[in-house]
Length: 569
Image 1 (cartoon, rainbow, N blue to C red):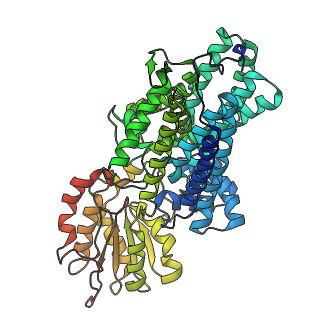
Image 2: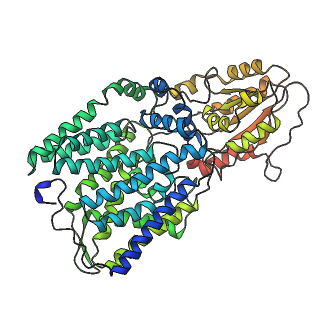
Image 3: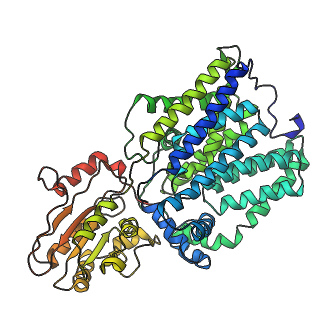
């Protein structure tokens, strides 16, 4: 690539030095292929139930395509992945395996696209190293199996990187259309893409003003604007979501979250609590250190390198892409007191992986490069496998207990209503058991889809006593009321505790704990309490620890493990 191709020229600062013996290089390539297959197999064989976010995604995507704008006004997300999933489910069905195969297939395409794009912009060796790190990354493996939009975001981000390179080097209509299409796709998939696109637009604008290939850069800018214009029909929905949905389960984050996001890139996102272990700690250090070397490192010998505080030309775009997006997104979220969650940074993940590959390429000794690639890829795959079967919701135990004990005419209340979708997917109470399902705080709304509009205000405004009285009337004197609750979840302000007390007031006797909460195992823990009607209630607890009322210790457990309690995004 010649010097006129700014911003994608990398000068003379990338020198791989000596190469591995050909037989070793072939074996290493075969090992990378095996790793890719293992990575996709891990993603495809996840059998745990869908948790809240996945179930909501499936429920929304099940609606007619024409209904998506109105439904998503209540959710807070853009529509592209939901539309794609709608078509996918029309062909393959709505089983957990079927819907999770969509992100798995997207990730397979992502690996191929990443290889060819990195090979074109950098070198074949850098491409192989990138794929080895990416396929083994716990973050990548997890989102290859979660039925959410983050695998699609990663694919779109790497496609945009390739489209920009094509447009800058050869600004044909086809290449410029690819840029516009990638920009529009990112905007219609996740809103954190806005931070990335602003940075990339400024980057290209700089070269349109001062670069050597100004005409290509200017035409690329126009293509990006066209992609932005394609988003205009969705802007009214976006502005409404911006003002009324948000993330009520999370408050302002500390500034340290910027570094924490890059550290969490090395974790399997299914983990409720990351267990300290040698391999997980090595992976964190490796990701951060190798990424920093990718920014600043220059090989000076087989085992030596120099750190130049000027970011190396080869890494400038991916550095702005990954580090810049995370910094801007985090700071804006902190200023607006909204959530900063690692999954939002999926738009920056693959550029960060490329940055690590460039860091490894900064070492002159080929055997050291091989060792680092094998280490990051292999240890990453090990960590991904560690939480392969980790469930994120306690809903299977709740659904099992309800199927065993609930009777037609009973009422099941979910507090908050965020606990309902995953449970109702496993046991459709109204259709299967003729049991009425109600979500707090919205008594009259179908709890299979959460209404996030002014959610925290709705929680504050709802009166637990009046809600309990309505539940009592709905159940009638001869039927039970079942309460599925997570009393101390963020953003509830104790309202679920008040609801339980109110039910004890309007119902004779004392509510009995049927399923105890398990904070140690689940991302979204739940407990099930029954409030009997007239007559005796002979239901025995499904699970209590050593005969001790688990709810008496609930507050203490939350204090110790509060970081594990999360809601939906």
